[in-house]
Length: 270
Image (tube, rainbow, N blue to C red; front, side, top):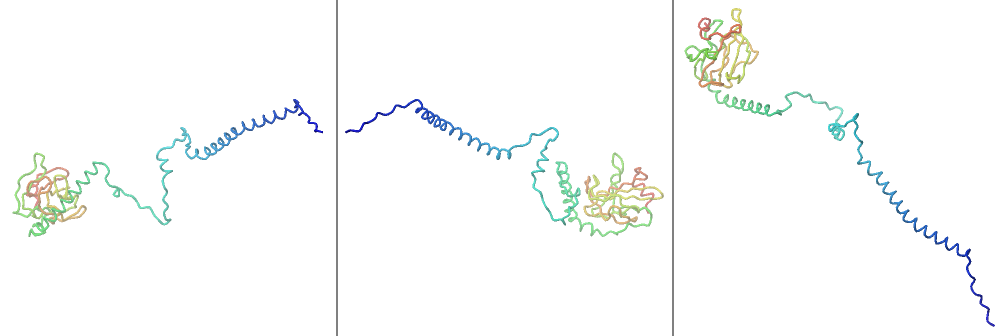
């Protein structure tokens, strides 16, 4: 006898409810997955930004604390650590080189003048060392002639802006101090005088200043501050500075006033 087959029971509304709920949960999970991915990427981005951006961030300057370029350079500069026994070398003006165009030009001119003076001094050394004149001026008076007698001729005296007497003499002729005194100036170049020596003396209670210009390069025998005697050798005749021939430019000032040198010598020298 064939078994009785029962027809499938019909699903009621209560049986269909779980199926609907299961589908809703599946759809919810599908919607959550993209949101979770977005949240993860957002968290990673925030982490990266939190780590990297502060390194490039700079505080906004305020009026109360403005940072200068010099301050930034000082902060960024490398530090130098030296041994404790190291000492700082003192600085002086001489340790700095010329920086302006005027200083550079002046320095070059001074170096060129020194080079010319050295070359001329070397070339003329034998000329005035072998002159063969006496090392002191003849005579015994308080005032002496600045050149050996008979070795010179006067070509020009004071007048027209010229303050001395030009005593023509061969190059290398010795020049003597006209009076005892102290060397006020002695240099290889003093303006138009060229190589020059200036003396301060006191004669008969009066201040007497004598100037000896156009000497040979390298021929000066006295330095500033040195005391000299009347008739002492102080240099040799040349043609330096504003000069066109070998001669001694000789000036005499008494108590600050200019006097005619040759007349003064003729009255006082002996």
